[in-house]
Image (cartoon, rainbow, N blue to C red; front, side, top):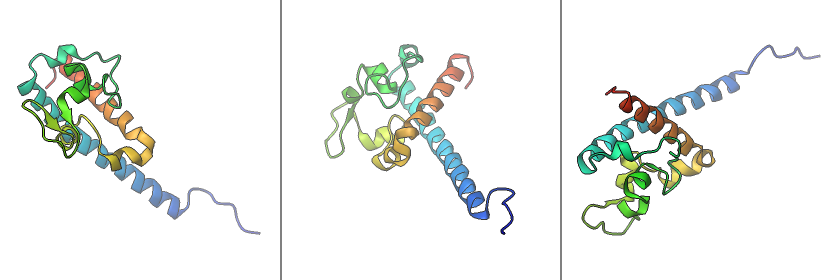
Length: 134
């Protein structure tokens, strides 16, 4: 009779470590994007922070995301890939780089749960900004 396992296998430990590292990488990546997004908003949409309703904040929603609330709809400010932005607009890849959206591969991974992470990180950062933290 084989002895019972007394804990996770080495393969399970490796998988858990890889998942933890992936989450840490996403937090670092999204955090940097959010900081760029905040700087961009401060420059291009003064007073934007007052327009954001944290109770409604949902980065996966085109009208409840950061740009959706600041500009009444995400697509008022962002154009699809391949389209040429008009004055004052940004393309979708720039929106991703500024933490306002996720690219297709990031969205597909974890069935959209990365938007939950992005929303939570924006929520945390906006709460700190409103409390006077930089």
